[in-house]
Each structure stands twice: as structure tokens, then as C-alpha cells.
Length: 343
Image 1 (cartoon, one colour):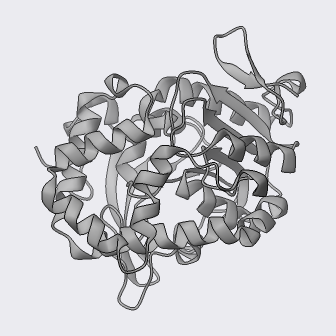
Image 2 (tube, rainbow, N blue to C red):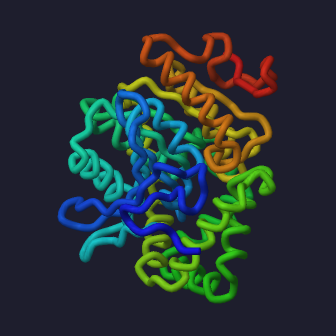
């Protein structure tokens, strides 16, 4: 079964996705594919941003639940999903952060809740730092942000094996091409899921199927393979230099929630702990037994955390009790079986 065409309801693929529509926006005069879910209640809109190698489809299982807070748009970044890199354009980190700002312009949105996973977490941090007038709330899901300098070389093995090779100039794209030729879309998706979730059996078959379809297209689309290498190279360079993302972390003015899985194989716990030391005013929630992409692996639990935080943020209070906010101490079990980092 193929993906619904723009304007068609994704509910035809799975009833849980009813009301989610594909759409092509003109952003800076170029086509950009998004998934849109109308608001179930009036409230500030939400912009959802995927990570390296992902697409708007990564958000299918959470878009409807999040729409209780406002209209939801999940974007395909340039070079990913259904959004090509424009001629003369780029899939580099800073270019894609600018693309997100242009999306907000196109939608006419302000006071937005922006949610980003992994590389998407870095992008939305840059956006929030640049545009205090547009970003009202920020949710970072295992964000690809710099580790403390003393921990820079303590990279998780999955990050070393999956991301660093793709970022090597002159070699990265060749390795991506080789992998796409030697492996089926099903194998590529299963490899990816093994890195971004703690338990692949939690992934609903309907979601896995549409992720496989997305990879099938990537295997035959030159610009997507080129964009993956360019984005990976740019991401690694920004994390190694670290100055721009760290300045952005300190410049964010919006209330912020960091959601982390304690079995993340790509973003080190040192990153999350260092982040919370830099911004102790941010809220932090750790999901026990969960990997790099909680919105994919445990969508119901993820939405519960975000729902509660957004309601309390709207009321001007922290959703995470002060005693359970993050610092650099060890995590301890909470009464609901999840882990929060102790202050």
C-alpha cells in the first residue's frame, strides 16, 4: 500500500492516523512536504522536527494526541522525506534551521511549541535562540547537542558506527551509497530502529511499513543520499566546534522540556547531564527503558509527559517538581516507574 497523496487522510492507512493530512507548502518558492493535523482544541500550534535520516512520518503516532493543544505540523526537512533540497541549496544544519524559520513565516505562526528529536533538537534550539518572538515553548527529545568538553570523546558505539562514517568528507556519501545498494529498505529500517529504540517489538507494524516505504524512495533518490551525507557532516562539525550550539542553549528564552530515554544509544547521558547543568531552569524527564526516539517507541508515554508539561507551562508552573528536575546527580526511580534525575 502506498502513502496517501497530498490532501488525502492518513487514516486510510491506519485508523490511529485519521485526520492527519499530507500537504505541500511553498516555502521560499520551493515545495516542502508536511503532515498536518487540525487542532482539537484552540491553542498555540506545534511544529515537529525529525532527526538525521528521519521524516515527518516519525511523528504519525503522536500527532493526533498532540493536536489537543493546537494545530500540528510535522515537516520533512530539505533533503529528507518528500522535501527536495532546492537548486543551489543545502541540507546543512544552519540552512535547515533557516528553513524552519521560513516554514513559520509561511504558516503565519507565532507563540509556537517547537518539538525536535536528535538533530531536530539541535535545529529547534538554534531556532528558539534566534527567534524569541516566535518560539513560545521548546521540547527537546534526546537532542544532538554538545557534550561537556571532558566527555567529548566518550561517544556511544552506535553514534561512532552510524553517524561518524557518513560524515567523513569524500567517503561518507560513498558509504551511504554502498549501504543502500547492499541492503534492502527493510534491512535499513530495522538497522535504524535498532539504534533509535530500546525494544523494536514496541514499534507498531503500520508505522514500520511507512518507514520502509520512505527508505525505498531514499534508495532511488540521488538528492536524498547526498543530503544525508551533507547533513551528517555538518552535524558532526557543529558538535565538535560546539560554540554555536552552546551559545544557542544559553540564548533560549522559552520554557523548555528535555525528554530523554535512559537507553539512548546515540546521545550520551553526558550530553543530557551537561545540558541540565548549563540550564538548570529547564525541566527534564527521563523515560526508563526507552531509547533515542520515545515518540516512535512509546508514543503514549511520550505524549503523557508532553501533555502534562504543556498544560502546566500554560498555567505558569513547572510540570516537573523541583526535587525531580535534572542536574548532574544520579537518576533515581520515581513512583510511576520512570526515572527522573535528582537535583
